[in-house]
Image 1 (cartoon, rainbow, N blue to C red):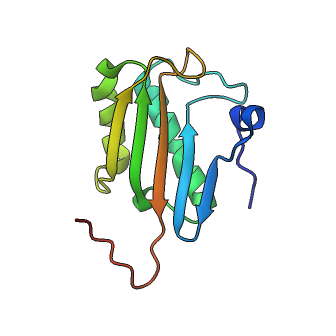
Image 2 (image 1 turned 120 degrees about the vertical axis):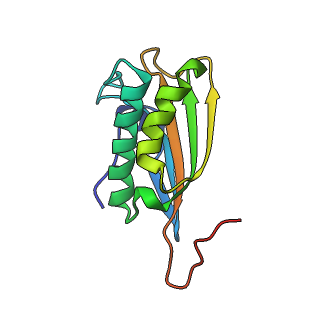
Length: 132
């Protein structure tokens, strides 16, 4: 498997993604470049970049966005919830995972406006994907 690392993983020492059995956890991900700086100036632009990254990360461990069951979004300005939510819906509208969005005082770099983490489950033959 190709190594999936960012500036922050190297600096702090954690994994971007961990897969145990059919459960996948993707660490908090930002719209940052190789130096940890924001790649977009708006919350919507950052959300889109993050979700594109998530798709790539999940694909590298044999999963896809439709396998996501839980999303946590940390925003630095809750008034951006509609623009973030609009982008979120384009990626997850048919999936409808459990989701949380909370406002935080700040992220690791002031130019970062949102951080997202996800959990996914890759179903095995015979699994029942229905929810309660």
